[in-house]
Length: 199
Image (cartoon, rainbow, N blue to C red):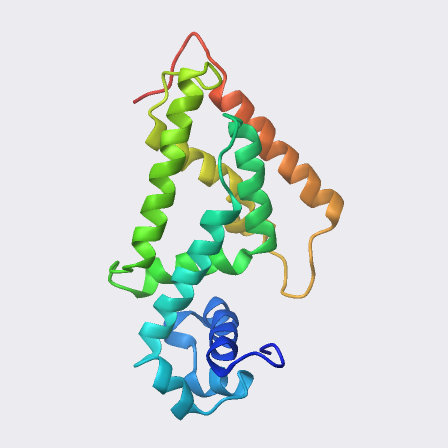
């Protein structure tokens, strides 16, 4: 349910975020979004021309939040992986939206795609700086390393055996252990070794 006291467009956007994360583009229903936003369908269509435009707006908002929340700083790549994991745990809807976008759109996510590519390119630049500072094995291609780090950080969100029913959160101790494993795995991944990665 949207926040009380928010303006209609904000309520619509908040309701749409929950709806699209749960049902995707095809399964989402405009009438349900409008009802949960305490707004009319006519008001919704005054802001957004169709369901896909609203979906892409939600995707862009989510990606901007993600891009500001998980950033590589101080050449600390393992801490960056931990921050990615934390964001995925707290905002699983963001990952679901990316998955829905891959499945249900033609790949033309602009400007949402521009946000994601800009974010990726900036983190890749920071990985290169960490390599120059001797904190990351220089044998890694930074773009490929960024992909692997993201995959490790989000592994439990996509691993079938780790799925739990909605409304049954994972125990804090389990989340902490998973986070520690993510950080440790990335520490080992970036450590200089005699046998470098395949480029």
